[in-house]
Length: 450
Image 1: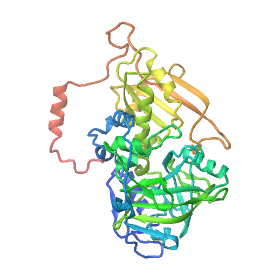
Image 2 (image 1 turned 90 degrees about the vertical axis):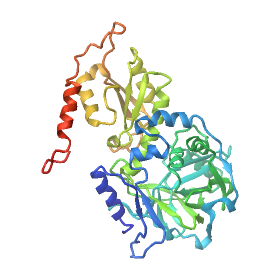
Image 3 (image 1 turned 60 degrees about the vertical axis):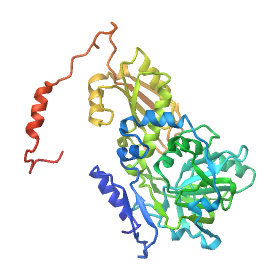
Image 4 (image 1 turned 135 degrees about the vertical axis):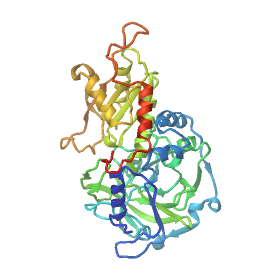
């Protein structure tokens, strides 16, 4: 299968069918027809259910509370030697360290070339030595040169600019491939400067194993059990065109000026597997959205003990969140909404009662249709931080408007009394069981697909 669009096309077709198997391409084919001996894996985190089970969570609906609890109890990493680090079984330096030897995908028709999409960029703050890790895209332009686009508000950008402010190149290492617990730990939303390694340990339940990078030594540690590491430098004040690129929003992102990375070394396992995220597909959206659920839960729970679950749906990209409450007190929901709207990534948060299925967009629409009066139940705020990748923003906008929607039922003014709303339509349990029994084994040939 070709590395040029064909693997991404398979993900797109599976997304349309709501099917999310893990995909491994054993012999990916480059644009020139050559077979790459390094296999490609994608869709590793496209399924909420599978991603949750990888963390030992049996019900994906409980992810937010579990993630918030584990990352709030970090475990410090440990250092191992090169002999005990599978990711350094093969070390290629200088001209031997060719990015073109990796099976890097060109995902979309308008992408200008192959991009690393699951590369975790690790830099450090030169003032404190504290490292930071984030997934950031890289356009492979030459054997030892690629663009490196850290989002302008990211901690890696702050680190890079500090080095540049000293007139120095910024050291950086990109690692690819690890257990989903580690992939989700590196996406924990932390303060600056604060290392992700301990958050990974919290999710693993044990210390993350790190090894000094070949180029940067213990200044930049990398996961010893990763699949591939790319090391290099981002030279000061060097910018090149990057993009357009198919973003998580589902739209092509505009071309931007980005730093570059000059590669000094590539290390990998002897039988390395190259991990790719399908940008804009469930594969990329699901893990980060689930991490957002943990962040929002952690922001709301201290203010509103009645918070039960949080869901950041793929349908809303990374802009919308749904939150369920169990018997909230008067004003509690709106206090929680105000707190969570401060989170940069949220654009709209919808609060519902726990009789609404957060994981059904149809149920959310039912709550909006039957429990909301816009003037009464919508909180709006302007001039807030948000994602500048939002395609609905006006050109040049630096801030966004956000909305919190209280779609919960009004609480009863009499303690213990039912809420002032008509009961929902229902049938008796015995009648429903009988109907299900009649459908069991029924020949549904020719029925439309649900």
